[in-house]
Image (cartoon, rainbow, N blue to C red):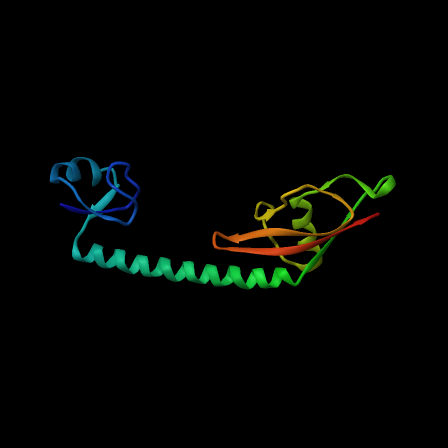
Length: 148
């Protein structure tokens, strides 16, 4: 019996795949547990349309991430920190602070988890941090640290 998997099944395959399995296994395990549906012509067509829709949404998300990366590349975020003697800062500038300043200064809301700060920013100056917008798109954002 041919079955379209609705969920990932360890021994059979991943979601959306069409697999050939024994009739008893399908009737007694896969179908009752809603792990898959029978591969009828209607269900095959629905799967095809779903895959087309998923591809379209993925392409739109990729294009949106690329435009956001371009936009972020032109921006500079100013972060103010307390400074002691010799220009040494108290603490460091975190990705959370960068995300908050980006929203205040430019109105762009970005999740702090997407901002990748490789080395802690502990000195005054200009830095470039990576922003992971999409698995295929990484943008850059300039951060200028100033003392107060």
